[in-house]
Image (cartoon, rainbow, N blue to C red):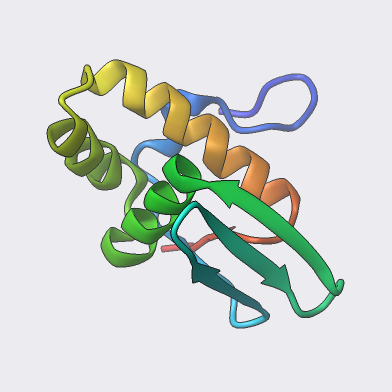
Length: 103
């Protein structure tokens, strides 16, 4: 489902398979993760929570599966993680740091 401003709703993202584009690299440090979009030359900083979300998305691939893994690891209600992770993914997608894979 797409809302009025062409953004995917969080509920729709839970089944989506995502990937980090080949033009994006990231490195995790003690307190933050730095993400670089090689096409734009822009760096983005993520706090440790965002870095963990990105690592989990990269390893798992499906947003809903990543949400379940994070909810279990951090003992946070699944619905809360799904909402936060979906919003996080929308932000990364809007910056070209994550893509939804088709099929």
